[in-house]
Length: 51
Image 1 (cartoon, rainbow, N blue to C red):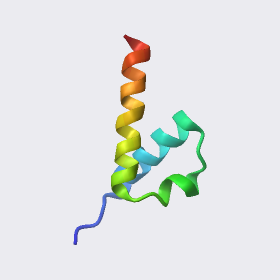
Image 2: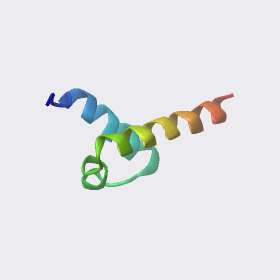
Image 3: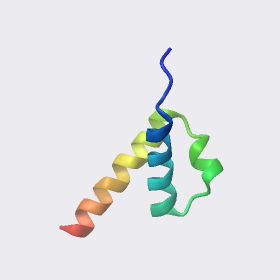
Image 4: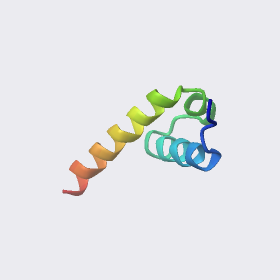
């Protein structure tokens, strides 16, 4: 089993917490797949807003 890179985890947590104002504990305790789904959704929202 490979370990998820700590730097990438920090980036994902910061990205989600910044955009949705969710607490650190809530975001960091999500499983990897769920966190990545939220990152992708935020990116889609930002793309639509910046279009």
